[in-house]
Image (cartoon, rainbow, N blue to C red; front, top):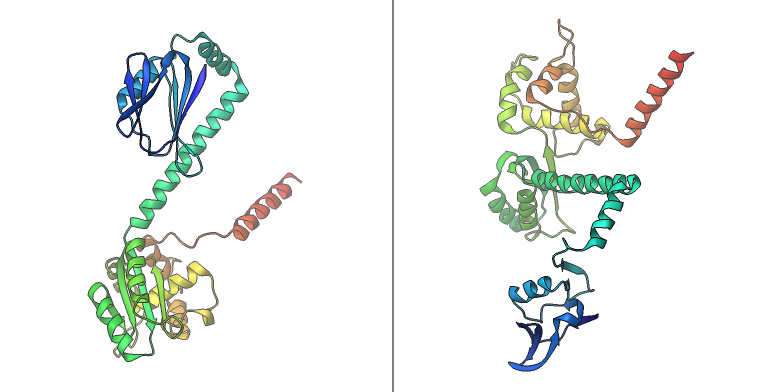
Length: 306
């Protein structure tokens, strides 16, 4: 039994009875009997054949292996009918009786499914609309005007050089790429901050936040920016003085944070009720935090057993 390797350019394979007919340039160059073949290997996309050839090879029990043009990576494997093959049936029975192999196969299957689900969730996360704050510092007036004309079409101005944008990660990446094509990276600066709350959700908690202080004069800061600064600090865990300059001054954000954090008669602060109402899930735990919690839990368990 032989292996037929096909990788020539402009080669065409046709099924002709019990043989494979090979054509080059429209002329028949030779034939190969199917009864002499065990497998056929086809590499690249230059060899032409139709589905009838694959069916003929499968009926004859000849395996067909398709390899990619670059690196010879396996693309597909076509096998013939194996229901009459006793050796295959015996091998399957032995595999089923092997507990170690079944456990390994099950683990690989579950791991593959989890990996596919992870990729699906990651792709869905990139397409999920969310709120963003876009800030830029551009020195040249001409470049500033060009960027402003692009941004104002898709974003809502919050304050000077600070805009609110709502869209997916891919959408904000496309906008950022367009802005970067209009500026000089060595002289200008553009920053994008994800926000955990959009404008519509913030309007639902605005009365709650405004109820803390009586407004005796017009506010000079936007409460939405202040609240986004608080969320950024809670999520990143940075120091107050390290709050990015695109947010209001850190002293202003800290003053609102301190007022919103004061516990009420029921023991809950306005900030806690606002975070719960808007559905904020809290900051992500770092590896050090998870490790510390594990150590604390085990330390407590040891003390209880004493």
